[in-house]
Length: 115
Image (cartoon, rainbow, N blue to C red; front, side, top):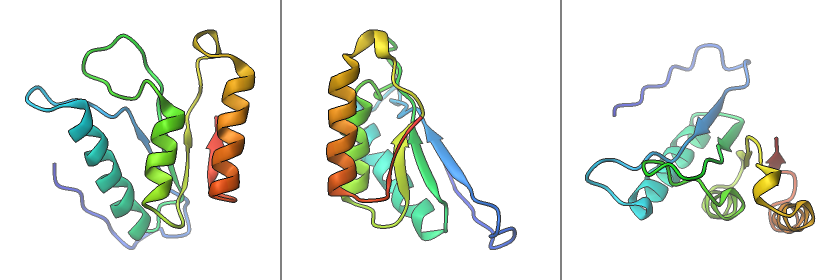
């Protein structure tokens, strides 16, 4: 995939929503590295947010543990806001999610979102 970015419309805040797709010949680990690479690129291009979409039981998607992925992306970026587009609370204890997101916010102040 070739990504191009134009400096036009820089006053419009842009975001990415990432499913962390696993390629047919790839692995979840490689997909997570690809997501990190994408996050670093869009951060340099001035994007405001990098959202990770939580999905379960889909072989080709590696975004099942969004809190962990949010930390992974935030640890290797510096300005872009990182978050989960939504957490499926039937699959998680709400208090655990609140504690995880709160901890990430403590580590990366002002950069963590929860949709």
